[in-house]
Amino acid sequence: MSYKTEELLAVCIARLIRARPTRHIAVGAASPIPAAAAWLCVKQGDPLHLSLLHKRSGNPFTDGSRELFDLTGQGRIDLFFLGGGQIDGQANINLIGTGAWPGLEVRFPGSFGSAFMYYMSGRTILFREEHSPRVLVDRVDHISAPGTSEPGVFRRGHAQALVTGRCVFDFHPDRGRFSLASYHAGESVESIRAMTGFEFDVPEGVGETVPPSDAELALLRGAVCDEMLETYPDFCARVFERKAAA
Image 1 (cartoon, rainbow, N blue to C red):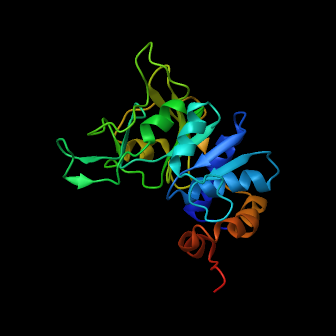
Image 2: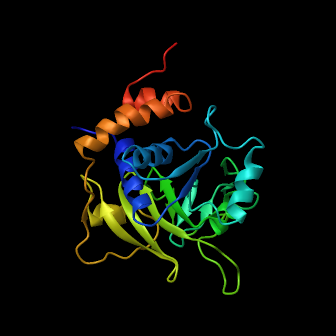
């Protein structure tokens, strides 16, 4: 089957979810691709508990994000997802804006609880569909949430990986550096370097991202879309070409 970039990213994230033991996943606002990845794992039989903050039915939280922060502070959220207007080579993210403080040149949606979730979740998968030098920068203009911390600062987890529309990077918190895990069809190590504003390592044997299987695509477009139609109707219409019943 042919597939869309969003479907490839969802499958890549689902594979990263399975790479480490995971019990409880939280998905924040405006995150349909991570939500699709999490549901894909569930529909494939993984025993995961999902907390989707913006799901109108079945949302476990009755007091907004405060309950999510409470669970995370207790160490009960194994995995969270974060994007950024800018992401740099040390896995710092910027959700504030560009230019000198207070970042009024280009405004981003705001940090909200990103720093707390980055520190206190068991691990974080970073994602951004756009992969360009304006997004993946050498150093973010402002740090909403740091990728690493000074010795002695309590931190439960770090970034596991960064998934983009061109490739997948692994993150190494001990070195504060990314390495290329795979590049998507049509890309190469050279094209990734040309479109990335930060330096990264290239391990021997890095190759093309394994494409979604027919079974994965069938689940995404069927059972996964069924779960997402209520919360992400525009995404489902655009990516899976399905619309909610009137």
